[in-house]
Length: 133
Image 1 (tube, rainbow, N blue to C red):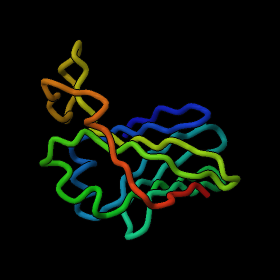
Image 2: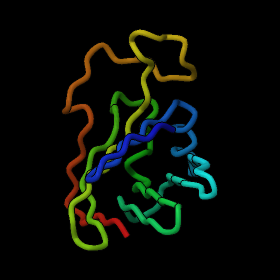
Image 3: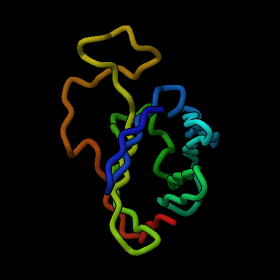
């Protein structure tokens, strides 16, 4: 799992085995030891979502089960959605397959890069009210 953070969004990139784990109902975990604290990001599926819950150095990113079913075999690059923070602000959540860098094909186990990729490949417009807590 790779993370890219800004003040109003989080982008998560997953390797092939992590996408497969999500599809089979397993949790994907990222941990970063920050002396003396640790930051953990737990990505998993549930019937509700999408949402982000955060407390004491742990972020729980929850994706709807139906979003990830069949994702690995599909051409869908990922999911791009807005969730609400606990104080009501919009927060962008992007979860994508991690493709190898064009300049370094030695990364493994990466997902083969598609010939064409644009913003419409990473989109999901849901009518639900996702949240961050």
